[in-house]
Length: 370
Image 1 (spheres, rainbow, N blue to C red):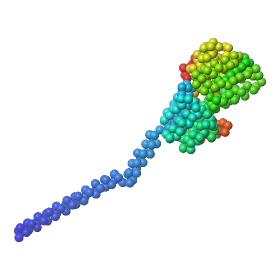
Image 2: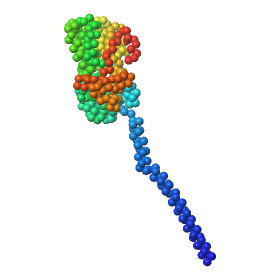
Image 3: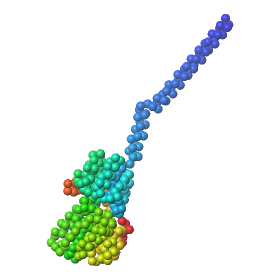
Image 4: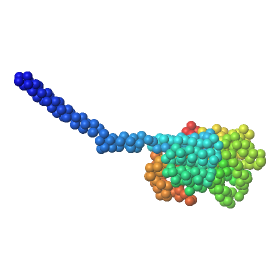
């Protein structure tokens, strides 16, 4: 009996211990389970994704802004792209700078296609042809890319807005007025342009011809419009051809930075200072020696860095939706201040300012700037 009682007591003690263990396990399990559940609960998971993914994209991924110039090896274009890059980086974006080896529409079209594939946010282009680029640029716009032109415009259907360095009419008329003063109001003159398809060059040339219709220029004769394709060697060859074909030539107007520098070199090498006058649009750094020597009495330009900077500011405003490219749109273009979108034929444009005259009195202070 005593043994039976002992066995019963042992059994009771064992059951009590088992119950206590079971209670202890059941107490700890829910808290661990709740902890695991909390770490993967839908609300917590959703909140975690929200803070990690969208805010990282918004704050970390830079907008991509591309610029395509006419061709490589062009100092004017290089300065313009410098200004564009400066604006984009100031605004926190990524600048993509592109230019083909040769100034052709085909090469620019290939670059546009590449940029569409890269899903850039904006494309700014200085066109080698106003119309040939239209299908590619329309494709870009249909893909949501904001397209604008600068310096040399594409047609109105191929862009949202054009960034213009100065009033084309004032450029054209000013160049004729300048060369007329240089040659005493009479004699043969020629124009050394860039490519025959360059919209800005062609517009300026049309205004030059319009200015020449004034009776006060009756003794001035425009004998030739030559094209150096914005290539230095070809511009040199075209200048030499003009001098050979027209031995009585009195003046050359080169509304292209590559062309006017090439013409300055030819006139210098041939000792024609004072015999054939030269003016046009040039970079102060490249034209200083010809202005200081008297081969070119004066020439004109605007700041290409500012042209590129304005284009960068415009691209950013288009991407942000601050402007749409419609007449009357206004925005603050960084250090250039407030700008307004105005009419430009069938399209719209944003004007930088008037052409600036560079001569012996001021070339020294500008030649080290650009």
